[in-house]
Figure (cartoon, rainbow, N blue to C red):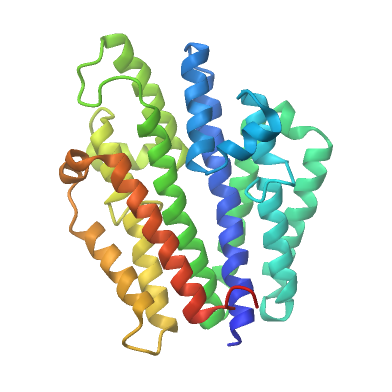
Length: 319
């Protein structure tokens, strides 16, 4: 396969997954903002979202003070923000168009229809009328894209690069989502908070679990009240949780093995090492050394892994 074709397929899938995960992060913030809380606490949540997305300085230059509605507008429909949902879906569609001949008709039509429909919805003001319903639609279109891809594409290198892009992006975004919530947590992590704070936190943990479609999964796995350390374990270390960091790295490694001919591949070695640390890690060890530091390091390594994938398999930067 030509490296340029692989590059378009990889990024098409990454941008589609990024749009979905941006919708998930915005939805959890929007839902928790509806709970009784002070303006200061609400602002911490929105600021944390911008910080972990590395967009805080860009936002403040453009909008000034942090306001929930303006943050959502910036992250949903601001075309000058390359990480907004609109920009991501547009980029996914453009990458799909560039390799139209490699895709099945169903995959192309799904990408194209998503782009046309999101423009229509935003123009009609459907996002402003019901943000949660709009976020659900973005998630649904991403699910549809993955399902059509797996259901119609030949199982060859093209599919492997698409899956590689999807799960590398998912690993990155799950780490960011967990970091946003834990970083913004106001009460004591180990349970010395007041009863009111614990009740408040329950709804926040429920919101973050629902944002990754993990609420029912948590109940099935732990059969207990929601505890922060178990939420962390589920989203970081559980290989059977579809959106966990561990499950995402399992997919990254397995797809890398299918496209790698060189047994000395540095990209595969780094991915395998990162996956091994998740496989044999323990949540108590991660928490004792600092969750925020752990997630920050993980994000750096995922970014490094993406750079190595680009240099080894895809179009070199600047070409």
